[in-house]
Every structure is written in C-alpha cells, then in structure tokens.
Image 1 (cartoon, rainbow, N blue to C red):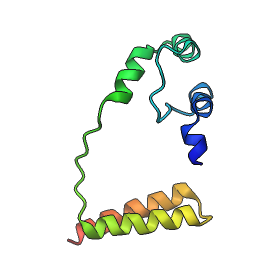
Image 2: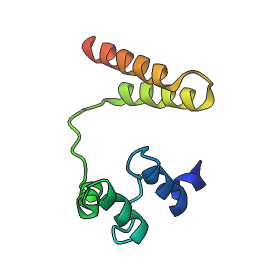
Image 3: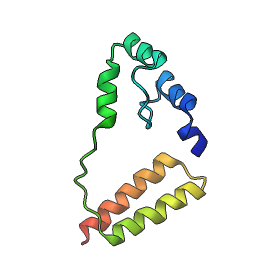
Length: 101
C-alpha cells in the first residue's frame, strides 16, 4: 500500500482512470498530466494550486474522540468489514459521543 501511494506511475493511474486527484502533488508540467487535464477541460495549474492549499479544519476533537477514531480506524484496517459502512457507523458514533458531552 505504501509503495502504491508513493510511486509516481500509480499516482498517475489514479488521475488517468478518473478515480480522483492524486494525494501526491504531481508536477503540473508533466506532459502526460497536463495533457490529461487539458483534454477534460481543467487547468493543470488550478489542480496544482488546489492541492498545495492547506485545508482549514473546523472540527475540534478531544482525547476521547481521538481515541475512538484511532481504535475504530485501526479495526477497519485489520478487519474485512465493508469500509463505507464502517466509516458511516464511525461518523454516527462520533456524532453521538459529541452530542452526549
């Protein structure tokens, strides 16, 4: 998994197969990437600027919230349950825990 996330060619495949934007900021001037974005009508410069912008988080988590997240995410990694359902359940549980505080 780590190799997949760090190898440039696998990250290009994420972009080229329409699975999203690579989490690695790829060189916007790479002819393959620039050509791909140009063909679908998106500025490679725009994508590069968006990927370099730091997100602003407005969610505040206390230690018990972080422990819940850490425990459940590790369980998801180790288990075979459906990831989408597990994430939705985690969100519900986290919201419930926050409302009870």
